[in-house]
Each structure stands twice: as structure tokens, then as C-alpha cells.
Length: 188
Image (cartoon, rainbow, N blue to C red):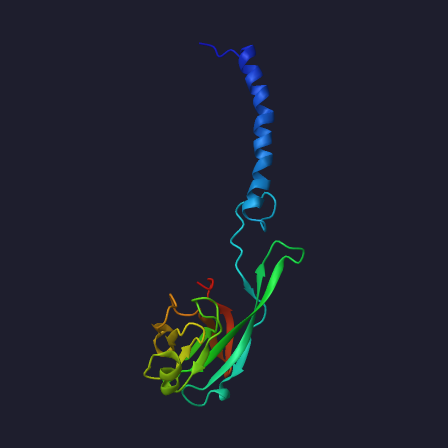
């Protein structure tokens, strides 16, 4: 049997071209509405991850003993749909040398509600101010009394915090501690 193009099928095909064209043209603005930083027709663009602008470095001589610490600000850029295209954030952090020689490198932003917490060496001070007596030095948040055990991966040992604070990625090279990036995630 021979396929004949009827007038009706030809008209359907001709009329479907503008409809399909309109749908194709609407996809790009719709995708940019869902993700404002996407480039036109680049639907396979990866996620908008923050980028670290410069590493933070410390000389290892600053940490001769266990529980010696340093505070720092880590500069990170987040993509944003503005004229600048990004937002620069300074994220406070702590580096603490642990008794085993490793380092605990964490953001100082409490995962409960975003307060900036402290490093408290004296367990008696923590017992008086935070209603919890730890075995050793801890991170302690003064806002809602969350306490984090730095010797056990920042484990929450007291308070309302839902998880440990975010970790910084670091490496030791050429007698320096180099902090290069921050674990992804938000406050809560």
C-alpha cells in the first residue's frame, strides 16, 4: 500500500512547526527561571558550587603542643544572579592541633542557627557556661549551648545542633598547613 500525503496531514505538519518552535523557544527562559546562573541553551551545566579564592596557610611552628589553635577567615565566592555574578563570603574557622598530631579544621559557624562558636580548652569553664562537662577541649556555641567534641570528628555532645560543623579540607606540605576548601552545605 502506498503512503499518500493527504492535504489534511500536510496542513497538520505545517501547523505543528510554529507550535514546536514556540515550545523550543520557551525551554531556555524556563530553565533560566529555575536556575538563574545557567547560560542560554547550556542545560548540562554543572551545579553552582562555591569556589575558594585563596588558600589559608599556617606555618607548623605555630602548633608546637596539643590543642594549640589559630583562628582564620576563609574567603569563598558563591555564584549569584546579580550584576557582579558572585558574592564574596568570609567564613571564620579554627585550626586545632590534636594530641595524635592531626589537625581539626572546622568552620566556626554553628550548624544550629549560624552563630559563631568558640574553642574552649578548660572543661570546667564549659561545665559552668554550657551545662555540660566534657573530657577535654571542645568547640562551644554561646547562643544555644551546643558543644562539639573535636577529638571525635566534631560530634555534637550537647545542645540543639543537628550535626557537626562543616570541615575544611587541608593538607600539610613544605612545613605548612594549607587550607584549600570547605565542605559543601549550609548552616542547617
